[in-house]
Length: 174
Length: 203
Image (cartoon, rainbow over all chains, first blue to last red; front, side):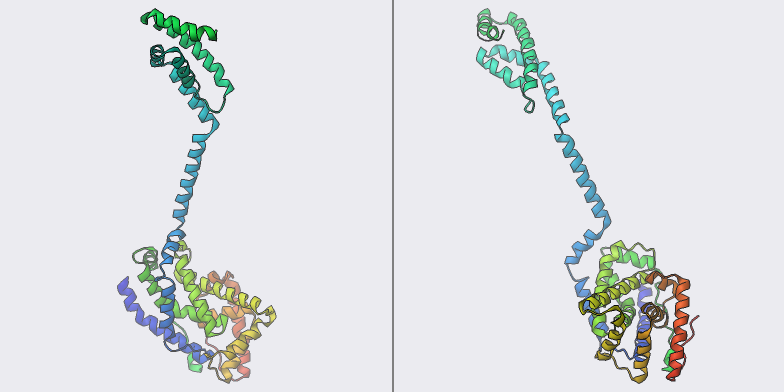
């Protein structure tokens, strides 16, 4: 290709001169001396040698915009599903189920004194931040069930401690 | 002048392997070198196309620079539906028309006065060295309807094919041929009256 272009440049030059000649002789149109060389340099300064064009060239490629648009859409959809109300509720329910099935909580409650146990029960059983009324019902249910578990666990704990816990917290709740 | 007119057929400067050349133009590594080559190939041709549309050298220089900037910017979107040569001619043609329209609005020139203004500008141009006959020929051309003059210039002086002119102007080939031969006939009649030999024949 390059060989062809180099060979061609002579004929291009010949044709250019021929075209300039016909315009001069037919229509009286002339150009300043060495105009085309100077004009070429000016055009190159404004295109090839202009660094700002590198960015323009990059942004002009349609594929870049398509990829960028796809990424924005994907990010938008991801963010929506992450923070949508349904997702938050599901996360709350699943965390409550985990709490419910956890035996470690009961063990630690027994080891703590009654006030601490009550506080911990409340803090663990009420993680829902958005809906305050609904979790209260759920929490009461869980607390009763947890209390039953505590009674079972009391078989392995000293009676005095169990009595103290029952007197101070559970009887009051009932 | 007679000899110039009869021998004025200008050979096409077409690329034998345009696809490869376009690949070079679109390649990041080869783009700049290829663009310089593009300038070498088409700068003069586009200049004369523009010059005959906008009249003066100064205007043609502005439009030529804008044309090549547009070509450079537009290369990533060149779809190769038409040849590179035709695509660039279309950009030059549209850029010239845009320039004429901007000037018309800027100087409050009515559409009817555009041709008269064209001739006035041409006469006042430092780079017009026409004698009486050349002035007359320019006058005849300027009196033609815009489209007829543009078609005539593209065919006669720029040596474009009817197919290429159709792509550039968006006018059907058949209409172009009719327009061209009518224009040639009109110009010949007027030239004969001022004793200038007939124009060359176009196949």
